[in-house]
Structure formats: C-alpha cells, structure tokens
Amino acid sequence: MTDQLTVSVLGTGIMGAAMARNLLRAGHTVHVWNRTRAKAEPLAADGAHLADEPAEAVGSADVVLTMLHDGAATLETMRRAAPALRPGTVWVQSTTAGLDGVAELAAFADGHGLLFYDAPVLGTRQPAEAGQLTVLAAGPAGGRDTATPVFDAVGARTVWTGEDGAAGSATRLKLVANSWVLAATAATGETLALAKALDVTPDAFFDLIAGGPLDMGYLRAKAGLILDGRLSPAQFAVTTAAKDARLIEQAGERHGVRLDVAAASAERLERAAGLGHGDEDMAAAYYASFDDGPTA
Image (cartoon, rainbow, N blue to C red; front, side, top):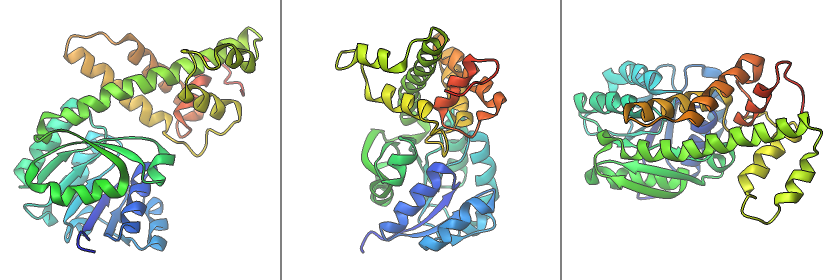
C-alpha cells in the first residue's frame, strides 16, 4: 500500500492497544511500548513489534503516537525516547493532557524538531476497537499527509481545529466535550442511586422519560452497565475519568469559569476509586453515593 507507515505506539492501555491493532489491520508496521510490558505483549500475536524501551520503539518511526495516562507520563516517556527521535518525525499526541500539559509537550516537540499534532480522541473501548473514534486534530499542514493515514486507521472521522498543535485547540474542544460526558455520567449514577434509596425501580424512571427530550442513549448505556454489573472491562476507567475531570476544573479556573459539576464529578470519581472501583468503567462513580458501596 502506498500509505504504509512505520508507527510507534507508546502506551497500550484500553485505547492505545485498540489503536495499535487498527493500525496493524490497515497495513502499517507498528512498534509498541508500554510501561507494564504485559499489557503490550498480546499485540505481538497481531503482528506488532514489542520494545523494551521508548527509544527502541521510535527509532524507525514515521509517526510516534502517544496514548498515556496524562501529560506528565507522556513527557517522561518522550524524554526516554529522545535519543532515538529523528527530526521531522510526526508526533500524534492523543493523551488528554490538559492545557498546561499540551503546552509542555509542544515545547518538547519544538526542541526536538518534531511535527507536533495535538490529537485527542472522542470514544471509549468499543469504538476504539472498531476503529470508530473521532479524532480532534490540530497541527501543521506540511505533515498531514503522514498523519492522516494514522487518523483514518483509528477513527471514523477527523475534526481539524487548526494548524498549530501548540495552541491546544483540539485539547480545548476535547475538554468541552468531556465536561458533558462526565456530567452525564455523574447524573446517571446519582439518578440510579436516588431511585434505589427511594425504592423507585429504574424501569419506572426509564418508562417515564421514554421517547421524550429527557431520554438519551448515553443514559441508558451507562445505566445498563451499572444495573447489569458490566463495569469490567472498563470502556473508560474511573481513574482516567477522574484525571480528566480535574483537568476540566483546572481549565475553567484558569479562564475565570467556576465549574461546580466538574469539581463534584472529580470528587465522586476519586471517592469511587477509593472504594476499589478505580479500574472499572467510569459509570462506577455510582458507588460513590453509598458509604458501604452496595451492588446495583
């Protein structure tokens, strides 16, 4: 294929592993690295080349794709990769790193002559595995012919927000979108918790709103995970959602906006993690409504 690339995927958690598999399916050569090697090892059966160090993974890469927990982990990983990075390499940075994090990563890219693309994604485990993510991307026009095949492999749609990745326009849009996702998730959990406390069956609530403006597919999907006990494997983990909620809260504070729901969502998610639900789907914030963490 004419667009075959060598892509280094750094971070093979829920999202990174799915993205790596879709890059392989698209015919690209994929090198993978993960801090915990065991999470990367299953990708070898799909044809990925496993690396023991970030520098080993990126040496021959046309594109480096990072999908790690946060901006600090991404910067630390790229510093470890630095000895093998080649000037002109495209860096697709898909971690939700926040405004300050993106600025730090862009500065690193500039210092190493990399073409930096701020490219967070919308979607969870299922769309990631199906290659149906929405990619929010900002970066220089000069490298888009190289970045686009990567976006096409992992996503169904790419939304370009600008030509300067350092400006963080894609991350800003991602934070706005995630603020809605987190608010809806928190509301779903609290609604089910209140229904339980008041001895109202969930079906009575769903029947009441069915087909009207208060009904929504996301509500039913997340409620279903809670009610059916399908919180593992996570579509999007509690700990990661808590991190994103704090980034949203911080972005609001930085720009003079008080985001009470984001702050409360972060607190609920952190409380759920403290109750032992950190690796479960973010819908497990439901359990933060109960001191004894009951089953649904």
